[in-house]
Amino acid sequence: MFITKFVKFSSKLSFNILKYIIFILPFILIFKSLYLCWNNDIWTITYFSQQLISNFPFCGKMLSENIWGDNLILSLDMIHYNQKFTEYIVAGGLGGCFGRSIYEMFSDYFKIPYLAGPGYVSSDLEKIPSVKCKTPLILQSTQDSNLNLDSGSGEGSSTIPVETRGVGSPGGTRTPPSYPSSPGHGTAEQEEFYRLSEPTHLWKQVVIDFYAGWVPSHQKLTEYLARLNNSCSEFSLNVPVNNTNPDINEGSLINHLNTIIQKHSEIITNSFTLRDHLINDLRHYLSEEDKAKIDEATRRAEEATSNYINKVENMNERFENRTKLKVFFDSTNSYRNTLKKEYTTKDAILQKGIKQHPAFENQELRKLINSDYRNTLKAFHDQEGYLKKRISEIFNEPKRNN
View (cartoon, rainbow, N blue to C red):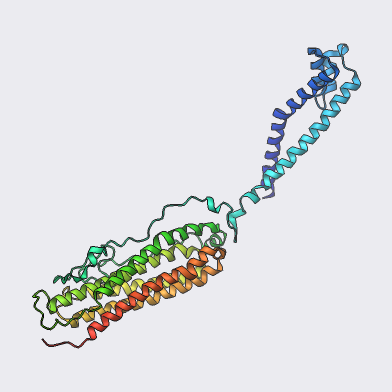
């Protein structure tokens, strides 16, 4: 390593000396010769030439005697003085080259921190260009028109997207939602070294994506839940007394509640997927031990999702009575509780582990983890918990014989 640094320093020194000899030294010699011509008020080519040659360091006297011999205009004392004066200037210039070479070699350690070690925050942080945020998830299935659940459709249709169809939809495919796994590049030691030596300004894009994409997406899900709560606040599986509308019957009411349960399942699945995106963005700040714990919780969540999908697909696609629909709701509720437990575990691991990383010293990231993430989830869980409770109340209402 010492040899490498010595070679690097030697190359810088040689380059600086070469620049001094080619560009600076000739200017000094010409300027000094012109000054001596002006000082002695002698403006001839011969006098200027002898002054110029005599100013050459280390060899000025020898060159002057060999070129002009007995025709020298300058005295030997003047030639000796000119040569010595220039040698002092050159010595100072070479010292400057040496100092500049040292500065150029070691200034890199101040301009760019070596491997940008722990605790480093770039001074150019505000100059980093803002990358357009990619919203982690766009909920295509719960558009305003699709949430008009008061239509009383007898088909009980649902517009669950391809990526989530099958979760809460008896007629869906078997494709469960994906759960991002660890990148797993290199050995554990390399991963740990990368985690601690990574420039901490990389969290800035995570913060941008969180506020521009994650929060609005989750707020949208919360709004959908609020509208579902509105739509079923007065809902009942009992046909109203003195009903004269032939479209309102026990079958249509069961289909309507089936749609609400499907929407509920779809929304909580999308919420878990959003949380996966954020955890995956922040997991490289965690230790290998914490990553392994998160992977284990993810495996259990995937297993619960797969079991839920298989169970729902084995049910009839149409629920002709409240008993079968109650089985569907209980399965969905069990799936919800299991995944909620696993994601609570993952959140706890993330929030504890990321506090050990230097990036957590930043106020924005600390606010994201400690405040805004929790508050956004709380607003969602309040609406989601109310909907679950309201559906349970609907099933527990005594059946009225018409």
